[in-house]
Image (cartoon, rainbow, N blue to C red; front, side):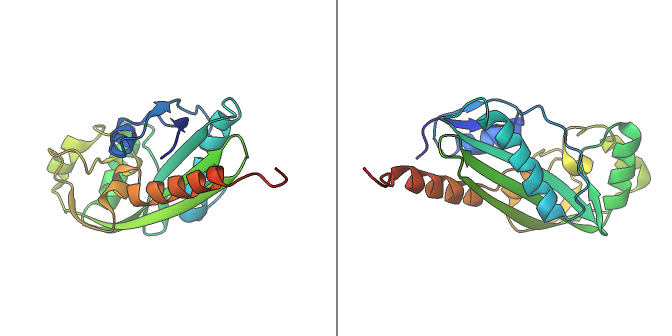
Length: 195
């Protein structure tokens, strides 16, 4: 489907999901700042996904580069990865027993043509209400994940219900990724004008 594909992420969950396509790819994490003044989660996630993909595409001009970014939004507040244990505790308390949304922005860049494909996927998620002492057992467990929880962790009973793609909550909505890769491959297969 896609030759020369690079995943601009160090996330083991994204790596595992992308492997399900059975397409060869390399992993080159994009070490970029994730700060932004953008307040709309759909725009924020796509902006950061593009930033990651562009950083790697600039160094690998013949590759297709896939970037992704995920945030959690509860009561209008964007929740990213916790910076410390206190923030992990605050995030989990904010989500405890509540519905929230998970947004993942995906960006694919063809380094050769500079063409860009992008999308954002949303899932609604309900956190189970846990007693304070039970909630504290999860504090600091998932410091590398938006929302400070991991739905793919079978020993994590924090999430009660998901409406929408589960892989989106994990961090890479695969139906969307397949669509972007198909579009990129069709674009690459088109003959160049003037030849």
